[in-house]
Image 1: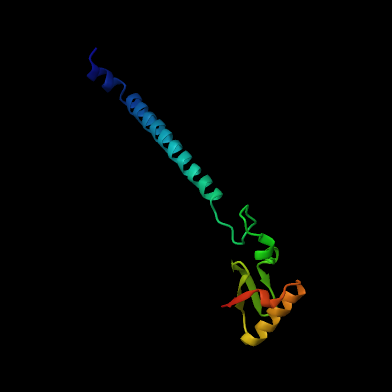
Image 2: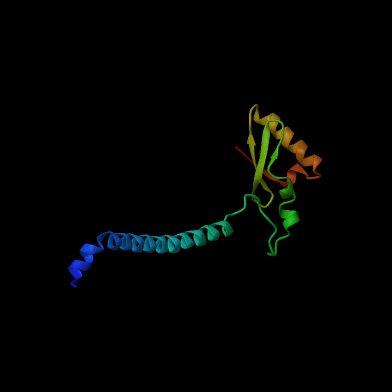
Length: 125
């Protein structure tokens, strides 16, 4: 019996065997690639920066440099205190109205939280 006769007699089985091998190879390649992709997603999850400053183990006194950090972002009447950009520097966005009215409202909010408005620099947007 020659190889040509075997292939001719078992053509359908040969084709199905080749297809099965190709499917197995595709699955192996896909699974390995998918694992690498999941690993990179896990890495991204662990390196996402936080929006608000968090306490660190550095030499600065965090509570003195960022006394309102637990309250941020704060939405008031016509303004939003977004975040600290630097120690004692607050970023504030006015929603509507005049800046002078916004200044008074932000200063009142600072005083309600036992913070002197003179201790903070306010960056308006």
